[in-house]
Structures are given as structure tokens and as C-alpha cells.
Amino acid sequence: MLATDSTPAPTPPAFEHVQSAHCESGVITSLLRNQGVPISEAMAFGLSSALAFAYIPLVKINDLPLIGYRMLPRHILKGLKSKLRLPLRFETFRAPAEGRRRLDELLDQGKVVGLQGSVFFLPYFPVNMRFHFNAHNLLVYGREGSDYLVSDPVFGNVTRCPARDLQRARFVRGALAPKGLLYYFDRPLPAVDPVPMLRAAIRKNCHIMLHAFLPFLGCSGIALLGRRVLKLPAEKDPEYTRRFVGHIVRMQEEIGTGGAGFRFLYAAFLQEAADLLALPELQRLSLELTAIGDEWREFALQAARISKGRSEMNLRLLHDLLVDLSNKERAFFRTLLKAV
Amino acid sequence: MRPEDVPARSNPLFEGQHKAVYVVDADGHYRIAQSGGSEAEVTVTEEAVHWFEKLAADALARARCGETSPMEYHMFRQRMDVLTLSQATGIWQWRVRRHLRPARFARLTPVLLARYAEAMGLAPDQLKTLD
Image 1 (cartoon, rainbow over the protein chains, first blue to last red):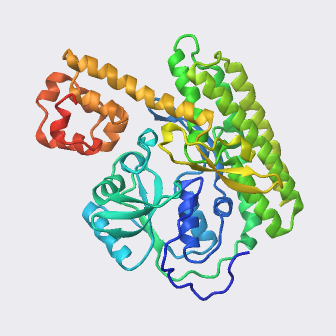
Image 2 (cartoon, chains in turn yellow, green; image 1 turned 90 degrees about the horizontal axis):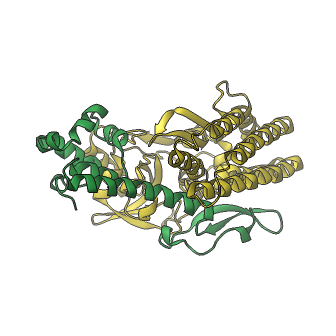
């Protein structure tokens, strides 16, 4: 259960690191937990209705279309802020020097600060994970000399980051540029009780998956991607085809999703919600979503083997899996919508 | 996903790090498990890394025989392409492409060179060399 007493917890003397699957839900979970609110990552993810699917051929990353399994960056932060009425304050900066000064000021006040930055310039990331993704989230809880004390929720332990690198990561330009974004709680937290919000949050997520009015979003987006896979130039340009297929899997498994493109994370949320709302039906649906997630993982494995050239380029198989997943998710979210 | 489906040993690709993934334990409860990287995940990460390595190697060969500027090599080595470099510098793509040509690159003003270097996280002088 969550704390309901309204007296603000004093800033804890020691910072407690929390490892999470996803950076954005992880950062807000960690911020809340360090204020004494025992919320889980799955709860943060589900409450902000962050599960989605998007296949947007018009937006390209290295010639490959944008494929996402969740809502846009900052959706979780903003969603939780409004749902739980959190005093979460966002600041961006035009001048990098000002951004650094403000960060130091907040840290010296003893605050834990959330930051947005580019993965590529963060030296504590393994080299093979460093790509130009500008919307990564991390926490800074102090500074020592020219190093910042970093708690990055996707890793198992706290770490350090030299000021120069952090500065570069915070002020990269380009798609999803962070503009030095930092965020923190600027007032004591109100009493946090997610239970009354749960049904609305679940309904909203069902609508995102079922009734998005654009064909490349939600369940229809999955089917659209399936049809696109079938049209890939397997004969004419096998290299592009393999990269395309690999790209779907990267977005699903590599980019901190907790497995199966956030489906397991959402299933974990439904399980928690089942207990909080005393709705055993949600427990059953959680298992159903787990089965769908397992099918996503099967898809990922097949696709990865194809992208590596380890198995024959069977695009029909990938198409069938995606169309099947689209149908299953549509049926799933319809049942879920009725259940709440 | 069951706990036994999660590879515990960290893949060399992830330098000893583990990621959090969600698994269902024997009682049917969700919990976080430490994953060293699944086969699918490791495979596609490797492929993405190799893609840039291949482009960089190709650019290096062309830069050695003067067909392109060293900057193209550095661009790919820093896992960028013309679009990302253009967005990171605020210089239009057609200008970036032109600046990648050896003759035009040689005449690049220090200001522009510094902008490219900053976006790639390298020193301006390094852009002119092939190491």
C-alpha cells in the first residue's frame, strides 16, 4: 500500500538507488521512492497510460522508420505529474552555462534532480549501447569535485559522470534535443494515492491502443507494420531488409523495455492493479498479456535471426506473427476496456 | 517470460552490466530479474554496431585515396549519418554533404569546423586527421 499520511518526509540522508527496466518510469519511481512514496515502476508506467504502439514511416532514423512501443518521451513524467498532482517542476535552458549553474544550485540545496540527455555522450554506458538517442533520463543526487554522482535507473548501481560529459549530453542538438532539461520536486509532496486513478488510466490506455484515429498507431499500427514487412525488398536490397527487421527488434528489446516492448511491464501493472482494485479479472488479463508478450519475444527471436542472416529470410512468417499479435492485442484491450 | 528464460551472465557486449526485465515467478507474480542480454537483443545490437563500423571502414578507405574527407570517417565512427550530423549542428543536409567533399572540407572555416567537432564530441584538429 502507498503512504497516505500528508506530512512530507524529510529528505533522506542517503540516496537509495532503484534499478528499473525503462529510464523514464525508472527516474520518476526513484524520485518518488526517495521521498518515501513506495511506488513501483510498473505502477508509474501504467498510471501514466504509457503503453502504445507506433509505426511512423515518415520519421526516419538512419533511413529506418520510427517504431515505438510506448508513448512519446516525457509522457510518463507529465502523466504522473497531473494524475498524482506532483509538484514536479521542469526547467530548460538556452545557455548551457546557466543550465549547469542551476543544476549545481539545486544539488547544493540537497535535491535529487532528474535530467534528460543523450546516451551517446554518457561515458558510463557500455560502448556498444551508445547511440544518438537524446531522450534518455537519469538522476543526479550530488557532486564531488568535477564529477556528478549519477543514479541511472537502467543500471544496477550508482555511478559517476565527469561534468564535461554530462554537460555535453544535456545540451546536444537535434531530434528530441533535451535543451538541458532538468526536473525536481519544488514543494513537499501531497498524499499520493493512485487507487482512484487506476480505472481511468487503464481505460485511457485501451483507447490509445484501440481507437487512435491514425492507422499507424495502436493495434492497427502493428498490422500495418506487418504488411510493410511483407513488402520489403528482400531480393533487391537484402541488406536494407535485414536492417529493417533488426530495427524492429532493437526498439522492442534493446531500448530498456523490460522485455517484449513494455508488454511485461504493463502486465506487472495490471497485476498490481488487480490487488488494489480487488478485481480478479485483471489478474487473469495480466496473464493473457504475458502470453502476448511471450509471442512478441518469439517474434523478436525469429526477426533477430533473420537480421543476422542466421535463418532464411522468411518475411511471410514475420508478417503472420505481427498480424496475429495485432489481432490478439485488439481482442485483449477490448476485454480489458470492458473489465474496468 | 519465466526467470529461467533470462540469461544471467552479462554478455561481453554489455561490459558486465545487467538490465532489469520483468518475469513471472513460480507463484505467478511479476518481479524484476537481472538480464545479461537475450539472444535477440544481443544480435540486433551487434548488427547496429557493425553497420556503423562498416560505413566507417568504407569511408576510411575512400578518405585514404582522397575520394572523401576525413570528416565522413569520423561521422560514421561517432555513429552519426548526414541527417543526425545535420540536426546536431543545425547545418542543412545539402551543406553537410558538400562539406564532406575533400576540396570543400579543406576550405572549411574554423567556426564551421568547430561546430562539427562539437557535435561529434571530438577536437577540431582531429577531424582533419584519420585517427
